[in-house]
Image (cartoon, rainbow over all chains, first blue to last red; front, side, top):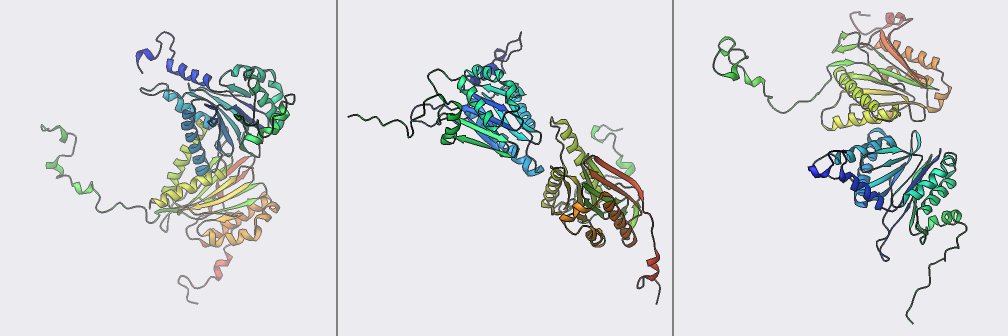
Length: 248
Length: 260
């Protein structure tokens, strides 16, 4: 690292702050846990009308998955590492890797990247959610290598609105059932959406893990029921999409 | 003293003769263990309704010589696992150090989620299989006794080939021939485990240790016994066989010097 990469007086490392800025540019993801379930929900973005949506939730092992905000390519590196470590744990110990353990391992990797010459921090923030031997967990991971266990959390663009919603309903999460928890996650997600946008089956992604329930990713039509149930008051979506525009 | 620093501090050639460098290099290919040297004999274990009991004597033999008479062959790993070692004692000590380093690593990691017997059995079986695949086996037969992830009794074995086996009762070495039939009378199948109490299991294992002492010439009357239950491990390492009866020995014919 060169002298101009950090500030001598405050000890700030600029690259880490730029990386954290990259997380704030990413579209929002939220996570919540109850006593029985852990839920991740995310807004997917597409680069243009004709392109597909960028993946936001990655199932890692049968007991947990991650949601990402920031550079998807860096998340790929981390998720591949997590998949490998999870598999290694299952092979050598016949044990589902504890969530605190895998979080610590990527945190160590990320921190090393902040203090070695020629390296850069990962430009991605993660929410790690699932169930291990000690029950459901949600962890937040930042590019600096900071990790925290959370009850509910939101990261990414305009995530402050989502966090405000989560803080307001903090006491309800622990005893929520599966469906109730999903509703909370979707409502929190909706909060941080700009006025002219809506949650649709195309741009939303939900991941659920629970005690005796494998972590599963839900996308597309699988979400329709939850979206309708959560936002009852909005007008029903046209089935089969809008009529095709033709030049007559 | 001469003027060659590389010679300082070494035995002088004019006094001791020049060093024979052939001691320093190996002739021919590397040789791995082809047979065990100092050995422990049988380990026996049996499940009961809320745990497992495991026992092994305290003898380490050097061939047929009873060389070390105070060797503990049961190793407590944590509050829910005990490993019993049969076979080579030096390889047992290597595995002991390996388990210690694993335990330290586990305790430094943030999880308060100790490895259970099933985890440890998987791990040890991989270690054994890896070593046999290197053509350098650890010459042991292990019994791993304890509780699995659901706090249910767990008992399984791993041998020098990496072969694994699980059963309500297990015995290694000579015990496989002499103790298993006795244990199986009490515990014929998995379903019978629920009907066996701790007292019954301890009694039958002690009986097995006695029979093994009667008939296995590499055994001893001092032994270790451990009971693993939900509330922890009770390990006794200085037990003595009780109520021995050698009356049967009178009737043995066909060995030794007697002619009729």
